[in-house]
Image 1: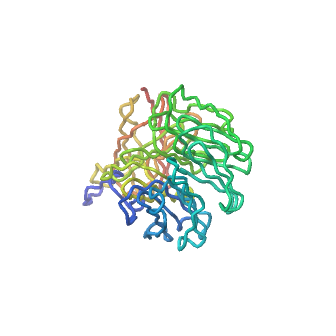
Image 2: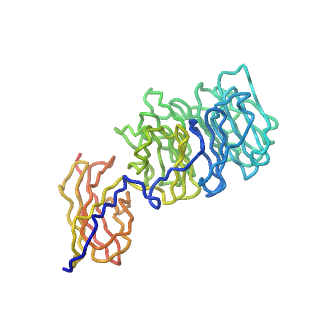
Image 3: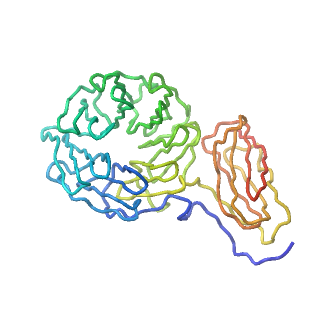
Length: 413
């Protein structure tokens, strides 16, 4: 084999690489941020403590502070809802609801209750006129963009998120409960999430079509496939836990946790794997937004915002261990095998190019992409962590440069 001079190559997904992971953006504030929402891959909004409202029109490269009247009323802002480039709603404590019709240049106060101790935690609109605002023990409904509000009783005391799939059928979640309405929010009934008497803090609804997911701060993941007519625990025995949950489609979703810990699923929530995030941040993740399958953002405490253009990356270490150009492509058997949680995978490539390592179950379903990287010729190894995968037989497949090889591995926990 021909000798070459190599610098030690460490493709380390624990370090930040701008084309592969979640990259910090400069929000211009150090206040806690509680909600981030995007209209598209350019225009987004975020809100938080001390009346902070910030806006971007370039995907988050720059964030602009938007002056607003909330410090005079209730300065800690809970949610933001952009309808289009001009119309935006913001909610806060004391049932404060603000609205702008010109992208934040001017604001009007739609509702304010100085004697109310609770707040409007979230809003959802089907269009610029029809929407709902969720508070403690109450839901406001509007058919004219918030100019007039109908108030209905919401049978729960601590509520967080609301969603309507049409003018009649909607959901809201609170501590340990998800409620449903079939009449536009005028009345609500408990959908009986199987929490076993524990009041997990369900702070977000993950929704894609008729699929709904909720997770609490120390709970398993609960899923409904019939818009909350029935529920199942899909991570039984595993306390996934999180502050916020967001699903991009029926299979791909994210859960934000404390200590800047972000986990991702690609099989509808059955298995979750930790994403590469900023190791220097310990902030809790409060809100997640995506404009499409791969472009997304999440907001944290102390004003931190992170962006990905690739859907994020798993935590994986790939190390170059060979200083010679090999003469054959090879994917070695993992060791140990069977294994408990962690195993080593070695592979050899002869041509430079993009390589993908994936995990499949015995039904042929892809359950995880371990890496998708451009690599030079050489011999590599990585330590694979099976995360929340259950015991069983799996297959790992390496693809690249018109070559594919697959091997079987056995996980025993």
